[in-house]
Amino acid sequence: MAPLRVGIIYGGRSGEHDVSVVSAAWIFRHLDRSRYQPVPILIRRDGRWVLGAEAPTALSTAEVAEPRESATHRVTEPSAAVRDGIDVVFPVLHGPYGEDGTVQGLLELANVPYVGAGVLGSALGMDKALAKTVFTAHGLQVVPSVTLLQHDWDTDSSALIARIARDLHYPVFVKPANLGSSVGISVATSDATLSAAVGHALEFDRKVVVEARVPNAREIECAVLGNDEPLASIPGEVIIKHRDGFYSYEAKYLDPDGAVVKIPADLSPETTAHVRRLSVEAFRALDLAGLARVDFLLDERSGALYLNEVNTLPGFTNISMYPKMWEATGLAYPALLDRLITLALERHAQKQKKKVGRE
Image 1: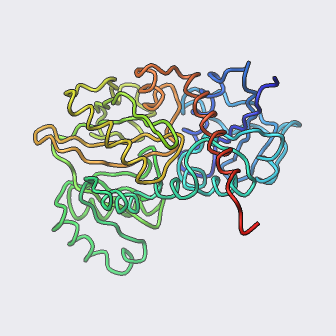
Image 2 (image 1 turned 60 degrees about the vertical axis):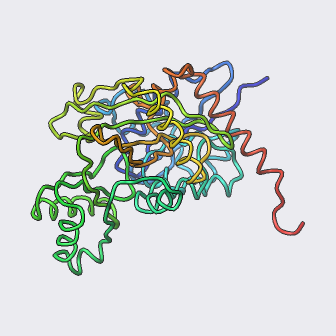
């Protein structure tokens, strides 16, 4: 039986382009060549789709460089790229224009199987503000926050600053609503630093989420895998060592000593079970499929567990928590990729049995 042609879409227009390239490089390295033929589909920073590019090789963000044009490169339309003899697509895209339902919509229109959540789940998972609304409706505890729009900030930033200072108290975290890898995130400790932090976040998105700081917080993460019967991995913990004081982009990808990952997390059996149960509940609340990494903040003193956010296309680099947690749970990297591709094909086959219209 011929190997399945797996179209690996990577790069993209978002601020997480470099992380995507590194994730793709590690997937290329671990994909079982006896079963799969990986096909690189590069999205350049300017949005052009390229076929015929060499497989990505950068194993850290410091090594990422825009590939040079060559005779084998073929700029093509997105729909043509995913239909070019591809059996299944693995969209290794982080952030807007890839993780937010846009590429998933293209793949749905092309009727091509793909790894990960559908259009709705991807869009909800990407938008931190809307995800909080859904989580709250499902009875899941989230960190208190205020969502603001570019228009409202431009109209009356003073009123918003006063509201945030009154309702959330300093310090607060300021985040673009639709971005990941900690891009655009800042900590604000005063009205002046809040103004600067919001301005910085608005460089990346028209919507900004300002969150209260959880005191004594521990960053706990859990990986979920599956479709209709999702399973949760052993939880892990990220222990911050970086001067930023939180899991910033620099701490994740640029400072080799920025953070320490501990898997399994040092939690009681009861808390471990609680984290795994809530991870599956969050996965189902957003109507996800395939995979997700669920992030929590644990107040060490009170024991309160806050659902922070869900990442529907988490990193697959050598330092990424998602594959590390599954490896600790007993599922090695190549087997994890195999399972994800199988889940994509199963979900697609199930959808093909449904009627379209009245025929």
